[in-house]
Image (cartoon, rainbow, N blue to C red; front, side, top):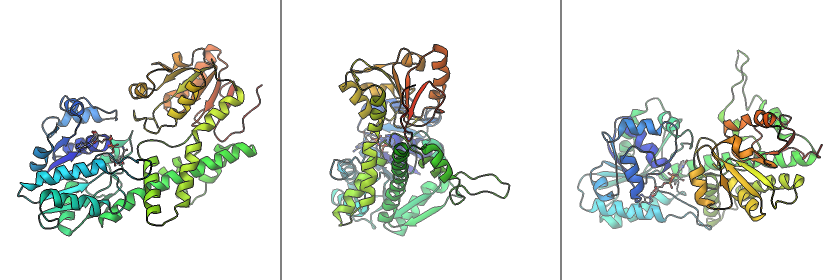
Length: 449
Ligand SMILES: NC(=O)c1ccc[n+]([C@@H]2O[C@H](COP(=O)([O-])OP(=O)(O)OC[C@H]3O[C@@H](n4cnc5c(N)ncnc54)[C@H](O)[C@@H]3O)[C@@H](O)[C@H]2O)c1
């Protein structure tokens, strides 16, 4: 099939590269000419494992990029909208969705063939039918259902594992306004046989995506609340959660005695908070949307409140040992919101680093991938370093903000150099007795030896 993808970020580019690799003809559209040039040069504008290899495989034979939306849409059977849907502080901000819908509608005005427009961006329930569809009709002068189809197909990929997630989907949700739309949508995914497919209404498809993200965010904030309480009552949250995980309703025991460990277990662990481009904004958007419809949304409001306070636990643990930040040498390990990505949007590292800057700390920071993004946020006040060893050399305190696997080398490194730096583990990734001075989320702060 010929597919135009509008918006070439994490979702648009990964979807485009994977669908091209599966045999579709894809044109990726973006308003950012630099991104378009990068893609046509086979240079991934974002970091994602396997993306380079995919671009080498599909560009230019089955994937090209352009800023010319009209030409791309007119040359395609289907347009996928994958533009950003930020939270504007009060509500979901649909300005990019509206602009993309209007431009697609205008392209369809003098395009005779039946075309299907699919919303892949995460949008609150009702958006596809109540916002996108009317804009398409108005801009094209045509009738949805008769002249073109409209559908909603949420994306579930996770940054850091995006290509694997897209290539081996766990479910495909297709919400079409009618059977003809859904049939065309289904044809895109014929290349993924044997996957569970849900055929549903657009607003149900929209709701599935928010429900999935809100549940995962809830598990994290629940774990963080238990972690904070554990620290207060003097128990270790890692042991507490291990005892909870072993409930066979969570980790069933197979006949051969092996435990099945479902993926959601990794969300039942305390840390310095969730970030990224999805959970924070999606939960806030759902709260606002629900409140606008008269729903109280108390649980999800608490999920956000717990998360907003969580990065400050790192500062509390740091200042318990070093009350005065001025001149304190602090190494910040990790800027990305999670390992495997260069995405720093809403990363807990950002507010923590800002507090350190404001307090006058002397900061060195290291992230294996996200340095270029972090430097844009902190053009001064932080010395970015390219190796773990150099970052922690001479540090009074070390904050682990992202669970990059390479940080597991820290105890051996500190032992080698004789460093007695105070390690504050925001991801509980080091054994607590592996360094001479340790503090961690969900653990009572120890008195200095
Ligand atoms: N990032 C994820 O892990 C993820 C996972 C699932 C769903 N989503 C959802 O997918 C959507 C996209 O997320 P993302 O992280 O890929 O966003 P992103 O910010 O990385 O990319 C969006 C792209 O759209 C482009 N754009 C904006 N308006 C445009 C227009 N009119 N025409 C062409 N291009 C335009 C921007 O230049 C940008 O490159 C969001 O709704 C997000 O919630 C994201």
